Length: 402
Image: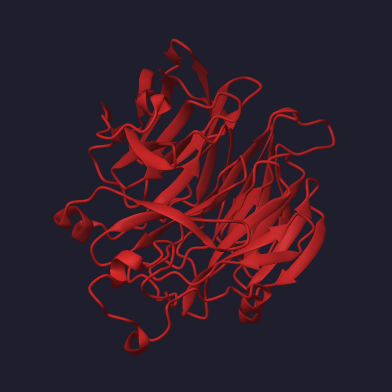
């Protein structure tokens, strides 16, 4: 992995001058006769260690959970084994199971894994005499499409393959079950702010100069991106009061739903052509980030909680790079809302915002492109510490704003 500090061309105020400097990095390579792929990571803030999940894969229906201790001077090369167990997929529609969510509870030294096949697994590092080391504590027969724990670790939001949303307590007890229906779109009555039909618009020489710049020239209908992977994503706001679900509806359009922590539907996003599955709610609460792909570019687009668009910025692609990119990107804000990570199959870009302008500050490259985007796990208590992983590599990066 290599990293490049990216200079910005335009400065709007003194804070835009701040650079994001990489002050430490470690890279681990995983090898062996039949290495399981690294599929998920989660920080243990109490011990400043990284919990790593390997597998399952199509050739080996096994999951291995390991711990990697992280220090300011680097990392210990040896991974400490926590548990290993067989994980055959209960759904015949999947070639193998996969980990959708890995979360570590530092107060109980317990990790929770949520699998696409429907199983919810707890791994206790210090089980009592009446507890098991590895236990399946719940299962969703229809299979799971996405899952995310609330920031206060009290609620678990799950979307199922049967188009339902489940809210569960920390004890994996069901609190609410909500059907995800196309009629949900009616909860938000977004007002069209277009200029009407083209044939009724004034086409004089000064018409464009007089047009309100906040009014779009055309109204999106929500046409799906040709590269949409039909993934479902969930992201919580930093205070845990709201969460968002990004999902394709009836093969027609992608829609971001916003729910309260009680499971009440609050709003849905306005139609956006080419909207893809990336989703990250800025912890400070004011913006929900996603990506949008058009014929000639990919944008990071922002929504307010009410579902209305609120700005965007273009990612940097040559026409050749754009044509070669077939895997949708992913997004992840860091814990203090200052840095947005954009993950590609072969790199991660770190963007910062100042004066409503976004600046590319770092680009961390993984030379061997993976069959998925690089997984990005920000540290919850050290905002500029991040773990970046591909199936065969793990990079720990410390940064500093200067």
